[in-house]
Amino acid sequence: MSLFAVTDASQVFTLTDAAVEKVQGLISAEETTDDLVLRVAVRPGGCSGFSYEMFFDTDVADDDVRTEYGAVTVVIDPASQPLLKGASLDYKDGLQGAGFHITNPNAQRSCGCGQSFS
Image 1 (cartoon, helix red, strand yellow):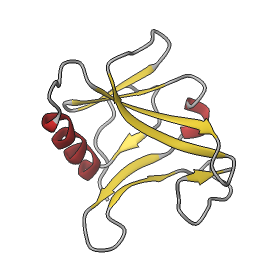
Image 2 (cartoon, rainbow, N blue to C red; image 1 turned 90 degrees about the vertical axis):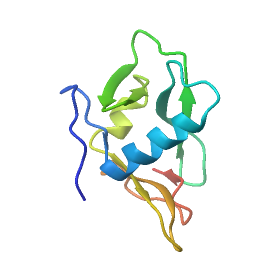
Image 3 (tube, rainbow, N blue to C red; image 1 turned 135 degrees about the vertical axis):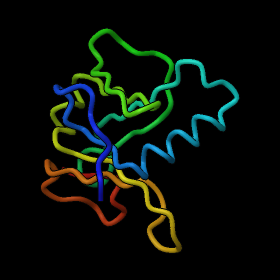
């Protein structure tokens, strides 16, 4: 699994090449691609304590960490950053397990659906 080069050394969340390619395609499919970024966040909730959120956003705060992966920009809010340190986002396409998947070394346990962790 190759990881796309990170251009911001302070950012430790990474995207694989497959994730970058899929996010680029999804952004291109949007009616407006002006200033769309991928926001990755951790919120309280889910069956294990925290859940991941990923969505396209146009509102980037001054204290958000912003990282470029080619044509894809990822932003993470300061509260989510420690919980995502060292994590990576991958995309798999196939009959089983298709979709985005976050591998997070900070997760001590996760639920069966893989959408929440503690």
